[in-house]
Image (cartoon, rainbow, N blue to C red; front, side):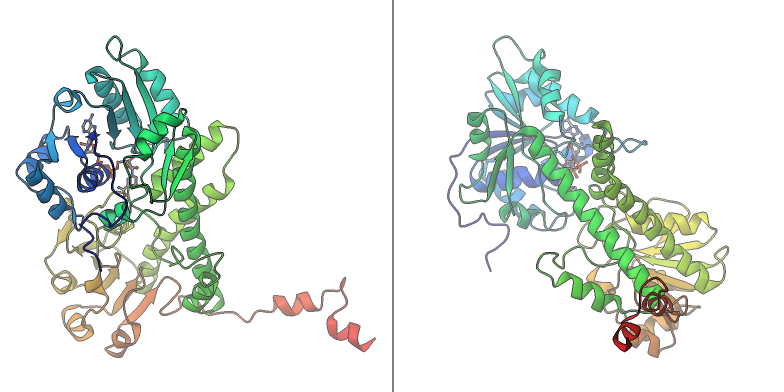
Length: 470
Ligand SMILES: NC(=O)c1ccc[n+]([C@@H]2O[C@H](COP(=O)([O-])OP(=O)(O)OC[C@H]3O[C@@H](n4cnc5c(N)ncnc54)[C@H](O)[C@@H]3O)[C@@H](O)[C@H]2O)c1
């Protein structure tokens, strides 16, 4: 297999100079990968700690493959880091905004970082510039941003805004950059769109569209993924209630080529810096356009319920939570990243602590700074003296936990595998009660389903048997 940190064996690009604003998961990946494609990249980062780490050659985020790429291209001179937008923008015609667009407390998008970064770029531009918005933003933002920065550029300099949303997944960001399902470029001028499309190899799948459409591709994609996860959790809950086999049911559903297996795994709900925020952004945009997003809202409610139901399982298995010790394995919102933003694992940790449990945690990479939570170096240290253990993130090391070792260190015998990665039988064999989402021990008995019989015998409708007898 090709080294994923090497550029793809695809069509070469015409090298240009790009200023990337923001060196987070998206910006650092874009900067390093654009340099690998052959461009000269000047990356601006305003956080002094992040910038200091980068200039020392350290990578402030966990993302496989980034370290090699950054080392290669700071070495080759194609990638530089600075806090000074004016230095970075000197003579540059393409600036890519990769700053955060977090949710406000009311769920609507907070676009202040974007406004500030765009203002800085406009003020520093020495030539006409394409302001490329890679950050995820609500439809209409690029048009608004162009108006917002219009008067801020120096005399004779024109700033035009292009949408080029990012679809990478944390933990696979480099791979995703070089193997995109699609590159989406939204521009109101085909020449400007082409300028941005030309940053990427010409044989990558390209969608050229309006700016609003490009922005909505990103919002709608993440909303659909959120809906899929919430639907999987709803099916899992129904399987639990009916005594049906969740893995077979969702496996059978996902094998339908029209549906697909991805994102059909039940769990403690979706999290991370993207899905929850983009889902609430989608809802806010839809409502402001007078089109209430009922499906998206339902997915959001179901996600809240998914997190609560994991805690409810631990509580019902233990009888009560106050004073009990519970171990949570995993803090990151998914395996393969150190990102804990809106992590369901962290929500479980906080929820348990709020309900009076003593919480001990482990994560191979992510950390939590909460004096009420004790973080240990191994899963077994974390499990020491615990009444119950929750597997909250699907890290590979939790797939094959040693049941005997766990049994020896834990006081209690309750395991709730919220992400469905453990083998239940070996844990069961050493005396654990294992619960899960749609798997493991049932928390209620599957009822006899009388309703189908009633439906067959509905007084208004002759039953098939009666009809045959007539
Ligand atoms: N993280 C993902 O998986 C992912 C995937 C696709 C899209 N996105 C979107 O991309 C955007 C960025 O996400 P992220 O996870 O990389 O965020 P992040 O918070 O990790 O990174 C943003 C960076 O921008 C820097 N910054 C902010 N204002 C700046 C300025 N004026 N000048 C220079 N630097 C500045 C911040 O210090 C930070 O380092 C968001 O809109 C997000 O929704 C994220």
